Image (cartoon, rainbow, N blue to C red; front, side):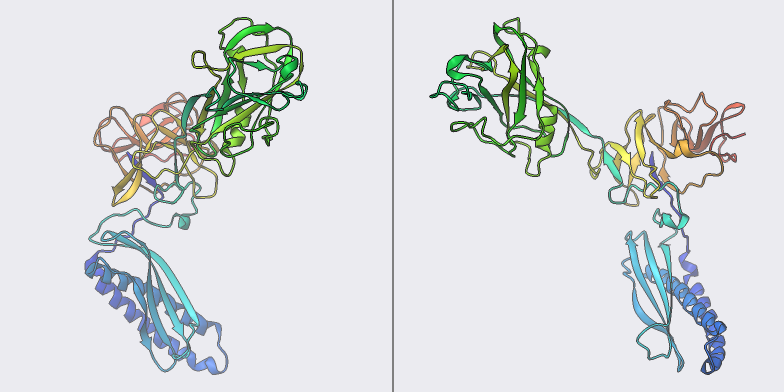
Length: 504
């Protein structure tokens, strides 16, 4: 089922085009004669009647231009418009016509804008009176779906062929990344603290069996820990729903409270840890996490107690202007206070290294590919009545469906719901639509619904209206609604007058 809303069709049989143009020109000559007579009084003053006469001449000329364009289009499907040319010239004034192509649907239809202009006197370089008309012209009686809905001042305007109209379903992905242990890869490091013995302050240690968070005796003091993870797949500006670093307990060294600060290096793609004070001296992210891990009482444990949430830190990193998928992230851990020590595996090839887990939802992007699942259909009326996916099977973008134009295909009970449904309090509903019903269906389906509840059906409430409805496997379109007497479905060709809420 495919829908495109707010459509008007102009039908102009080709065999009448010549007659229409002749009639228009004849009418124009009559009006021209009146204009000439009126112009005799222009020497004493250009009165309102004279100006009105010339305005009418320009208006009729613009209509003649439409008729001329229809004739040309029937003769040549590649008709590309008409440059300004003279229609009538006399010693008092000159009348011209022009046709501009606004929308080209090839041999099927064109959206045009036609101009009629009056120049006084006939040799003037500038027109004194200009009228323009927009219209859709078609060939061979074909029906098309292209018109300017703004002519109707709609409160909801959905068009599958407008730029930035359809946005596809956000994609959720996740990734586990291991830190690389050892002196070769240099991704996991302990740095001697400021209270370490003099020779160890700021020094980097890569090949240990474990990570002390953070006190490691008088020799190294309260260490800084550096953890670098390579090849992060998260897209730029993705919404990070969850991110954490998972440790594995190496030993139950010293119980007691400890408070740690976790940050990251504020860089788009930080390199390996290198040089004294590389961890403590790096530029840090604005986002930081205060982590108070409980006692680690079981060797080999790797659960919630051994995990630190770094979601806001990762979010800041992927929002950086220079972030790209495939780059690295580097985190730092330092002590704030406390006497407890948490000892984790470093990952020496036998034991597990700390892992980074990132889950993200890629921001909704414009739907342009055939088969994209639709999450949002933007309302172009500026009334903020965007249609958002509510329940059922998500509809899909289908390209080149109706006269080469895109459409939205609905399946099963898939529904995009707009705030419009809850804002209607009564009155009439006018809908312009181009739709191609399915030949068969597994279940009943609605094309346009004023349903204002979150339920998946229109039953059970007396303020649900379905102006366009497909009943079962038939291709006919019917009207279904809940009235004051219960659920009703109109017969083929039998339509009821309904308000936006209750039909009776």
